[in-house]
Length: 458
Image (cartoon, rainbow, N blue to C red; front, side):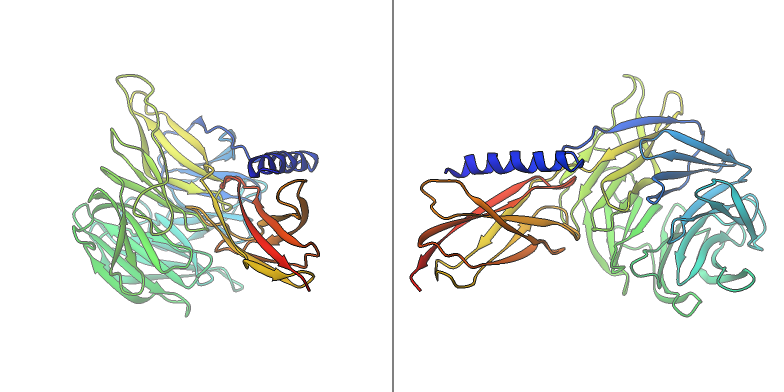
């Protein structure tokens, strides 16, 4: 049987199997955009357990809740100066920094009601209350302003009988309320950054001992500096931090060990958002015209493998990505983006489905092998984005490559780096053809490859 015929038959078989299992095929859903009934935006958190998105509305004093399609579920009012948000590890509680109340609110993600409010002791208002949140070291960390010229870090510990607030950490580093970043895979690393519009200050802390122990500091980082920092995100391994500064016109990367320069992601004018998926895929956004608004990069790649350019609502208007306006679903199948229509100032939640990327399979097998003896196939899947865990490849064997049909003899698990192996014990004589078939998923296209082994007598 020819390889193409085999592939088409295998593809049909895979599609039918998925349909009978109720899983559907791997075709991606269309991207959508839904208008939001809020007039301001600052931060976003994605709740995978309940498939909800939380968006803070600081000047409206609310938190908006939508589903994964962008449809509004509820608007939670009474949250004065709702600024930064952070989701608990079990997705049961959303924490909200209330700048204008000088507090942190706790919202139940099932009832969507506020269940507690913790006074941060910082005072309230634009140059006092907490503005950003991150969960690290078993505590809720917040950035706040001491006055119009200085910022600091604080923490809220809910692990004991009573909540404990600790302030005045990270002093003499920030000129305003810092933004925070952390990653659940390495919870003892906290990164903070702040910009007064001219030069950013960036710092890395070890919070494993319950306090912010500075590991590295750098002012105006990067070969061309960092003016008007807009957003930052940690890689899943916490070894790098990616920052979006309005200038220079690319997203910068720094090592967290010493904040040394470690590359860049080529974007365009006025970078203003960055989000990193658990598999390391970087979404980098800009507030610029005549270029893609959002680009996707494989970890460390110099060029993007996909991009989105949001269409303008009219010839005399623009659609722009908002500062800090990107967030992934934990499984990296969707990217959420908050945009604004310049004509009406309407905010929209863009639901962007992760595109299927080209995937290739390589297979290694011995040129010859004794029949009725163990024969090992090995190989690797390659794609611009990682494969995570739980994937498999199917192994088909064709005992006579010149005629007949192949037989599905088993499957092999695919490791996170794309590698796999499978051991067979063929009984035929002469040439035997093996085909490794990968059915794809929401992020990867299907792929296959073959290898022929000559079986010798026992």
